[in-house]
Length: 166
Image 1 (cartoon, rainbow, N blue to C red):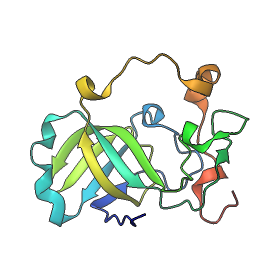
Image 2: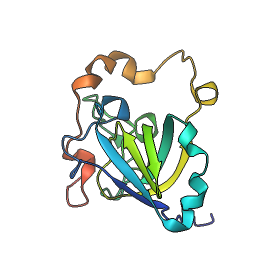
Image 3: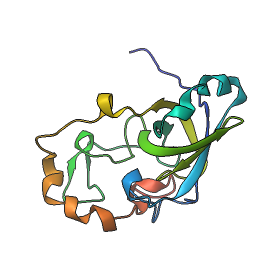
Image 4: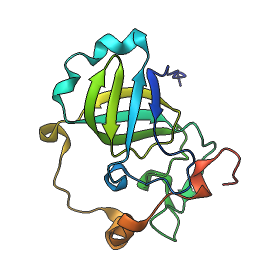
């Protein structure tokens, strides 16, 4: 297979300094604010983005390494196939979050509901469009029985640091 090389377009700044206690999804980030600092070479690409209230951030999980085909996710005590979870330790450690876009000025995006570690490399961003991106679902797999615990669940050390064992 052809190797894929990605170049960050910027960096994400947030109040989250380590993986422990970081919200596990943006919906549970409770208004936590941050910013995405876009490299000047890409700043012109932000034109017309200010009209969107929410955006996707696509980023590199820079504080994790390795992966396993079976993981115990934050919301369960049983192992599941990696691709049936949102665990950050993946063959290609790419993260995806939908955040509220508050403002854009001079290549800096002020954002809210940030569940991303400070210093995370930003790979891309896209506007969130409910007509394209929101679906009615029939099932949510193993999360059907655990979703009542998501509001109180936070990240822990199992996925967060290159220095931590798997």
